[in-house]
Amino acid sequence: MPSPAEDPLIPDEPSPAIAPEGRPIVAGFVAGAALLSYIAILGTYRVGLEWVGYVVAGVALVVAGWCAWFFRDPTRRIPSTPGAVICPADGRVVMVGPAQPPEELGIDPAVASGMIRIAVFMNVFNVHVNRSPVAGVVRKVCYREGKFLNASLDKASVDNERLGLVVRMDSGTEVASVQIAGLVARRIVCRVEEGARLGPGQRYGLIRFGSRVDVYVPAGTRVLAKVGDKPVAGETVLAMLDAG
Image (cartoon, rainbow, N blue to C red):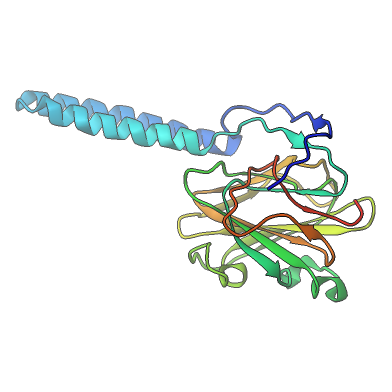
């Protein structure tokens, strides 16, 4: 997908290398790996099978390392292109097409009926920190309980646990970003409240462990994303609004 290079970039806000929501989990994994390694090596040493203990310790450390990698929060190069809809999630585009956003978001039915959905599926190796697709004021934050179906399925938009965010731009245009839980995801985090102002590509939340984010843009938006694309949160331009 093209990302206009002629426009200056917006500086990304400073952030720790590991997302704050993940620190207790990473600490738990590291402590568990250290304890398991100690027990495994000590126990197998006594029976002359030290290599088994080292294998167990190695696996435990790899899992702990993966946990830290999962909660990473890298700096991104945010485009300043007027009217750009920036991808809110790392992953793979699994759906592009007309779709009505969830009713609880309170989008005008006349507008909602013509909206276009771009769905980005995140696997357990993607960065899971989510970013605002556009600049504006958060008009609505709405959480809804639901199932934990495979997030790549179309019906996950309706049936799964989700948290929707509607950002109203200064022009009056509204863009929605919906975090959807998946098979493994059991926690959706939203860091902002209604009335907060977000910049383009600004961090606003996180989902942990494998999930999806749907972006809803108004009718007439020029969509650049295609199914199969692998966009980068905060950097890739998914679509261009007629007016930003």
